[in-house]
Each structure stands twice: as C-alpha cells, then as structure tokens.
Image (cartoon, rainbow, N blue to C red; front, side):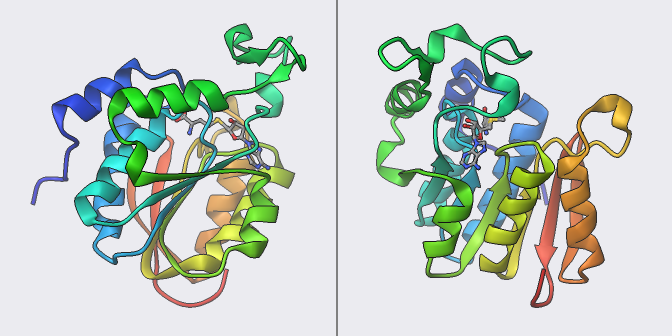
Length: 215
Ligand SMILES: C[S@@+](CC[C@H](N)C(=O)[O-])C[C@H]1O[C@@H](n2cnc3c(N)ncnc32)[C@H](O)[C@@H]1O
C-alpha cells in the first residue's frame, strides 16, 4: 500500500514555511502521523520553531479526527542563537532582544488554514511532559539537540506513547561526521529498551513503534 501523502495545498504550505524539515523527511513524518492518527490519540511534536513540520502533523490530525499538540518555548535552541549556524535575525523580538518564533509560527499555521487542528503549548518540554496526563498516538522529537534536551524529551514524552503508537526522531546521524549525536543516542536508547522497534528510516528521520511498556 502506498504511503499516505499530504494534499497539494498542505505540501505547498509546508514548502513555503520557514524551518528545518526537508521534503523527503516531511513526507515520511506525514505518513507516520496518518498511521498513528488511527489510534485516535493526540499527535505530539517537541520543537515547533516556525511551524514547518507542525503543518504536516496538523493535516494528519485533521484527517484522523484528532489534534496535533506542539511544544516549544519559542526562544530557540543553542544552534539558533545569535552568532550560531542556524540563527535567523528575522525571528528576534527587538523589544526583549531574544528569539521569539511564536508570531511566525502563528502566521504559518493561519496561512495553511490549520489553526483549529493544533494546540500550541509554549513551555519547556520536560515541564510540559511532567503535567501531561494521557496517552498519545505519536511523539515527534525535534527539540533541542544536546544530550540534556534530546534525552529530556525522550524521558519526558516516550512514556506517554501508547502501545502501537509511534516515536519519531529527527536528525539521527549514526556517523558523527554527518551531525550531532544526541538524537542518535536517544534512538539507540529507545531500541535498547526493547519497548520500541524501528519501522522506517528516511534520511535522518526514524520511525519507531511501541511494542511493549517501558523506555
Ligand atoms: C530544530 S527546531 C524545530 C524545527 C521544526 N520542527 C521544523 O520543522 O522546522 C528546535 C526547536 O526546539 C525548541 N526547543 C529546544 N529545546 C527546547 C525545550 N527544552 N523545550 C521546548 N522547546 C525547545 C527551540 O526553541 C526550537 O524552536
């Protein structure tokens, strides 16, 4: 069976949005989200930034009759701060002098016509995870890329993934020459736990299914 694909207008909105998700990986994320949506549980993203990948989760949530929840403090990751490789000066709040991706994110979602399918949570991932009450169909980890942050995302959110639900991890690079190792270490940890099995690999995007309790 062919993987589910987003509508042309969703794909166009995704491609027009500011952000870090390449198209091939975006299509794999969308297919995973549609599959997980069948559980009828929320689809959770850690790392909203300006909403590029959120568009795909929102469209899949709409198709499934569920909701996408996206979590970010909107102050940017380490590598997005001034002077670093991924800094974008257009997402700095001139009044407070800090990054603020929330206004751009809101415009992205509005333009895509997907606002009503998304709950945006502004906060730190571990704090939000600690007060989160129920099971989720999918967790997409694309937040901070240090061991502290990626590990915290895993520890906070993986326990909420329902049996049969999906854990999706971005920027998994087995070879250190290709990129930072924190998401890869989370990926290795999930597999070593015996609670998850890998079901797809698309470039640096890995999709794992929960097959047993634990992390
Ligand atoms: C790589 S970007 C996300 C890219 C986005 N998914 C896309 O498709 O363009 C990472 C985001 O994670 C957020 N972030 C980093 N650490 C976080 C934490 N501990 N809690 C919440 N958000 C965090 C940053 O503010 C940043 O916007």
